[in-house]
Image (cartoon, rainbow, N blue to C red; front, side):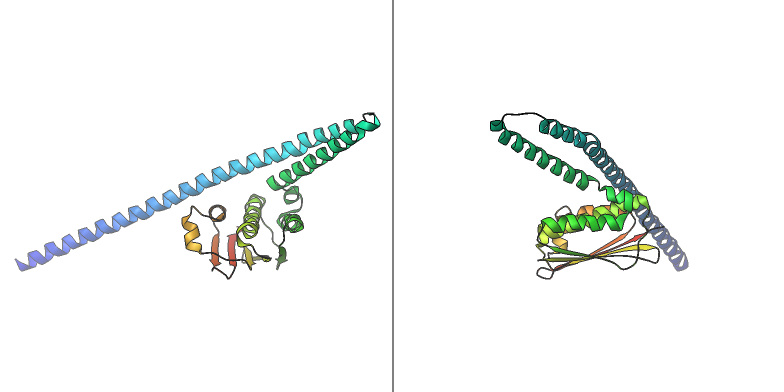
Length: 245
C-alpha cells in the first residue's frame, strides 16, 4: 500500500512537472512570437516613415526648390522704379531665406551624402551643420573604416542624429565625442558627452523619454545591443553594437 502511494505521488509529481514545463515553454514561445511581431510592426512603421521622409525631401529638392529659384530670377528681371527697389530687395532676401530653410529641411529629412558617399561622410557633414549653429564641440573618431549595408545605413545615421539632438536639447553638454568602428563583423558606435546626465531608469519609464524609445526601436530592428550609462552630474555614455551580417 505504501509503495502504491509513493508510486502515485511520483507519477503525480512528474505530471505536475511536465505541465509546469509545458506552461513555461508556451509562455516563452508566445513571448518570442510577440517580440517578433513587435519587431515587424516597428520595422513597418519606421520604413513607412523613412519612405515618406524621402518622398518629401525629393519633392522639396526636385520640385519646390527649382520653382522658388525661378521665381527669384523672374523677380530680379523685373524693371522697377527706383522707389520700388527696396521692396524688390526685401522680396529677394525673403526668397533666399525660404530657399535656405527649404534646403535645410530637405537635408534633415534625408541627407544626399548618405546615399552618395556613405555613413561616415554623412555623419561628418551632419556634425559640421550642427557645430556651426550650436554651442557644442562634436568630435568624430573613425577608429576603423566601417562598411555598412545600405539597408542599415539610414538606421545607424538616425541613431547618431538622435544622440546628437538629445545631447544638445537635454544634456546641455559642451563636448560630445562619437566613435565609429567595425570589429568582429559588427559596427560599434560609442558616444560620450560631458552634460548634466540623468536617471536612466526614470527616463525609460517616461515612454522612452529623451528619444530613447527611438534608439531602442532602431537598435532592435538591426538586432543590435544598446547600452546606456548616465548619472546626474556625470554626463552620458552610449554604446551600440550592431551585427552587419
